[in-house]
Every structure is written in structure tokens, then in C-alpha cells.
Length: 379
Image 1 (cartoon, rainbow, N blue to C red):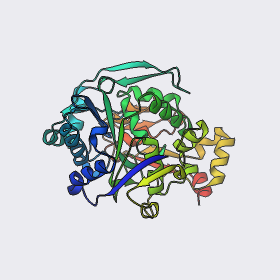
Image 2: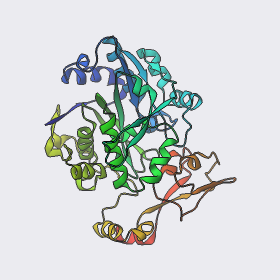
Image 3: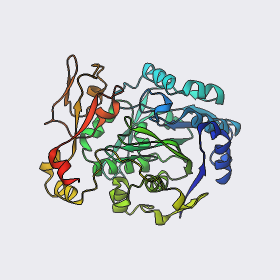
């Protein structure tokens, strides 16, 4: 049975000591790395944002992990490709590291900031849907990598946790190509499971000291959770994270896809939680994103009549008074549904409701609109 280790951590000022306790619970860092090995830390750095907004992995969490691995004589490098609205280049990485507090975290923990923006095309004939992935080179060159994710809601996948964080292994705007073909949450879940099979992390740690609720993964609100989680299996960690935020297993696209493939765990009954009882983990009233619906009728109609799907989901819409014309939404759109003049405009006929534009907007200029049919069926 898979294990997920959990420890309380009320605030980021306590992360260093609590991370040491968490790794001790797992048997120590030395079991994950040998002296002299190169270890890549892969945080969630979706976009250049203040850590207080809970969009990204908090720098104190990255620093705490980095210190433990450098103390084990590992060579530690930060590796990440931000969201699809960004080019995968040094300028974008410098801005993201600076805004997300990673420069200071790396300096104090002996972590190298990774600026290698090359990537490799990796054949994967065993993939169920994806037979070839583009993977950023720092991950391929490292002896192993540690997945350092953030507990957040997500408008497409409902949960952004351990497995979803692996999408950042795909370089920059190459991500849009995958969104263009994996147009539903069910297909995207299959993509994530293929990616996990190709490049599994050696260790996954979740920053759930402060999570995000509501319109995640970038425009939601911080929510105090007070936990750090760790597992050798990111899927197991996501099973527990679903329980924390109150996302039912039969509504989690990733767990449903795993169950369909016969991959375990896909249920909390298949996970051993070490450190805390399950009934103390659940957070009451954790707000789900707009695209999440409790209506069984709405989901059945959408499945049976896919042509009606645009009427049964929420639509991204531009708030012209807030739009700066920066172009991040246009760069992130996998179907070229966004045009840019003074402000952005979305072609609703082309839109596939992947919400990439919404998550890449730093100015809160895209709202998710609930139509009349959606509101009526989702009462």
C-alpha cells in the first residue's frame, strides 16, 4: 500500500524544521539521493507572482528541501518551465525566479538556478495516448528530480497537485500543442498519466501550508491549510489532497483515469497516511472553481450530447476595463481563439474551454461566465 507522510506546519516560518521532521519520518534524505548526484527540484512556478498569492510553491519550502539535499552532498539545481503564456527562455526564467522569491531561496540554500532552456524529444511507445513527449533538458540531465508541488484548485482538472505539476516538464509554449489535442479533462488526465509513467519523480513534496481555493490555479484565493505532505508517488499524494479539499474521487478526472487503467491508488482506501488521522485532514468549505459542477444531470447531458458542451460549461470572457493587452492569454491559447488589438478578444466558436487564458492572466482581466443553462442545472 502506498504511503503519504503528513506533518502540520502552521506557517512558512516553521518550514525548515518541519521539513526536517517530515524527511526523518520517511527515513531520511539519504535514501533518495547519493553523494555527488545531481538533483533537480521542480517547483510549481506557473507564472511570475508574489508568493503570498499562493500561485506558486513557496520559496521557503524549496529552500528547506534544497538545504537537506545539499547537506547530503547532492548537487541541487532548480528546473522549471513556467506556463504556456511564457516563452521558455532565460529572460522569462529570470523574471519568474525573481518574482516568486526563488533567487533568495536558492542563495540561502546552495541551490543552482537553472537557466538551461533546451529540451529533448523523448519517444514513449508505451504511452496510452502520447507516444512522444518534449521534456526540458535539466530534468533529463539530472540523476533524479524532486517534484515540489502546490495544493491548488484547477478549473480544468479541479485539483492541481503532484501529478498536474509534471506538466511543467514540457517546455513553454509547447504546452499549447498538448492542450489543443487533449481538449477535455478526461483526455488531459490520460496525458498526465502517460507523462508520469515516462518521467516519475523520486520524491514528491506538497506545499499545503497555504493552498489556493476558488478560481485556481492562478486566480483563486489563498486558503490556510497548515500542512506539508510527502510521498514517493505523486498519485498517492493527489488522492490525499482530494480528500483535504473535499473533491470526491468520482469527480476527480485524474483518479477516474487511473481507475480506468487499473493504476493504483485511485482511492483513499488504497493509501496509508502516516503522521495524521484522515478525519483531521479534511478542510470544511474549501471553495471549488467555477468549472466544477455538482449537477449530475449537467454532466450526463454533456457526456451524451457533446455538441451542447459549450452551453454546459463556463466561458472565459475578457474584462476590457482590466485588460492591458499584454498578450499572455493569446500566447497560451491552443486554438488561436484569441485576437489582440488594444485589448484581447475571444472567439467563442474556437474556444475549447481549457481555461489556459484565464490561468495565465496576471491582471484578473478574464472572468469565467456561467450561462443560463449552466446556472439552471447547477442549482
